[in-house]
Image 1 (cartoon, one colour):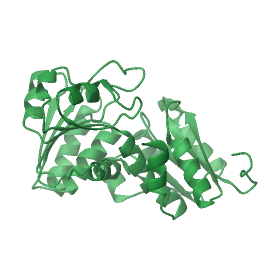
Image 2 (cartoon, one colour; image 1 turned 60 degrees about the vertical axis):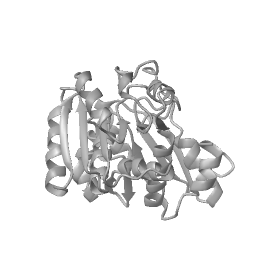
Image 3 (cartoon, helix red, strand yellow; image 1 turned 90 degrees about the horizontal axis):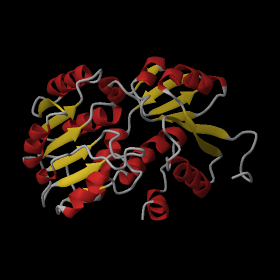
Image 4 (cartoon, helix red, strand yellow; image 1 turned 30 degrees about the vertical axis):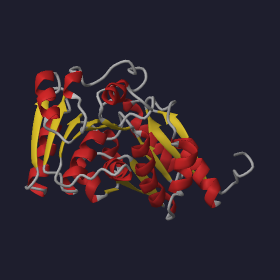
Amino acid sequence: MEQRITGTTKLLALIGSPVGHSGSPAMYNYSFQKLGLDYAYVAFDVKLEETANAIQAMRTFQMRGMNVTMPLKTEAVKYMDALSDAARLIGAVNTIVNDAGKLTGYITDGEGFVNNLRDHGVGISGKKITVAGGGGAATAIQVQCALDGAREISIFNKKDDFFARTLETAEKIHREVPQCTVHVYDIEDQACMANEIASSDIFANATIVGMKPLENESVVKDTGALRPGLVVCDAVYNPKETRLLREARQAGCTCISGEGMLLWQGASAFLLYTGQEMPVQEVKERFFS
């Protein structure tokens, strides 16, 4: 790393909390070295109340860009100069590009989720998907699945500050993709969740449940809802096999970890930052095999 840092090296970073477990720095820096690009990528642990300061620092230090993870994705929207259509619709950003002081926010989480499924031979079109979560990543998944032809989406979220936003997301999807039916439920209603999972083709966890330090927990309490033929995806990628995925595998489900979502959303952001395609196959073999 130190041999390739120069006075012109462009700085990129991940902000959010926690970020110490993130695989993004290794993935991006490997890709920069592979392609001979003069960039460096680091991670900063930034709390929600520090979001504005972190983004101002991006301007001050003339950083090329930032990836944004939980819990900052919706807060970061407030400080953008422009938003992509998807980011505007979703109300969250996970990628910020700095073009000579103009900050544009993008959301690539949904693309990462869908492309990860496709990479495992699973399509979205015509399917019913149940999603746990109402934050930035969850909303991106819901919107992208609707845009890609899902016939029905059941959303489970806590009745907290995000619940009203989840209802708004459902309404936005109804307006933009009226052929996709969307329902919103209280995540505490485990009986309802079990019923919805039972009639779904795909179940996705897009909450922080399963991520360290919650690695011993699962968002699905009734494991009887898990069955052969069901595709179970987790947006959590550390640990690679969450409790949800472990129990789903034992039940005979097709399991897809969050590492692939990280890879594919990162590939989209990499293109936005550099104008070049990430060496996906090499990155997959090195970090995700």
